[in-house]
Amino acid sequence: SVDYREIEGPFYLSPLISTEVINISGVKNVNNCMMLCRIKGCSVIVAMTTTSTVCRLLILKGISLSNTILDSPSAVGSEAGSQVLVNADINATLAAMINNETFTWLNSSTGRIGSIQLVNITLTGCYRIEVAGARGGDNIYRFTVGGNGSWIAGSFNLTAGTQLAIVVGQAGGSVHSYDTRDCGSGGGGGSFVYEIADEHLLIAA
Image (cartoon, rainbow, N blue to C red; front, side):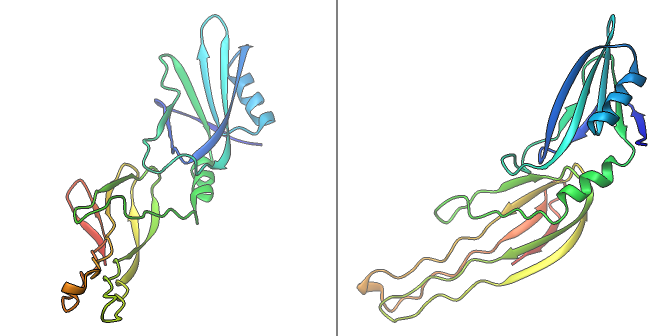
């Protein structure tokens, strides 16, 4: 059988997780909510008691890439007087869903001054981060092609609530004018990932 445990306050669910929500009214008590949850295969129960108990059952469906890791986690069961119960294995279930998912950030602006993209870590775990610097510019009059930027990867233990800043380098400027054919092309920009709280640099290329 499936075991459930009561938690204090709401349950914070990553925005990456797609859910199906079932609301059932007129339930006699919380034990009946748990029985319904077992039948439906749900992972989170929110019981709201007035004259009778209303059960809100959440079924975890998997990763939804229509949402983004940039969003803040949603608070399930934040209504006053709500009783929240979760599947005893919910953290392992969530980790299995998110594990091996890949998210890619590209350069988000033009010009020499790029923008910083923010990421909210909503699940504690080990994250592999790969960073590539941008390629250099070309010189079509000297038949030279800019070289590729450097590449580096590492694994980092990150806790839920950590906010990361991501800077993605842009390609170096190319020589497009005959008058400047003897000038060097621009170098590619660097890419960086650092923690916002203390500006601790995690990785750079």
